Length: 94
Image (cartoon, rainbow, N blue to C red; front, side, top):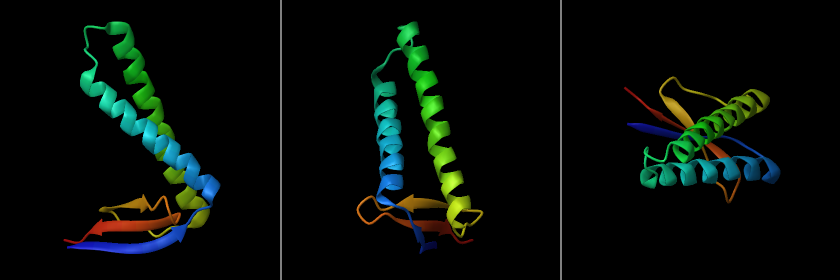
């Protein structure tokens, strides 16, 4: 069973920060599907960029969850509604 609970809201500026990281992360993932490891220079640049973007993405969530004190769950994660700026906790119950 899945639990969905609204746990907070961020500002439009904060939303824009995570949306840019989300879109970059997805774009890099798609690019990784078509880049060949044979192109060593481009492949290494892609891997490095994916790592840096993933780290920034996680740091944003960690920072905002502490700042706003969002409820969490061991088997859960947060999701943002880019239109409303609302943060939802999505967790699986055993």
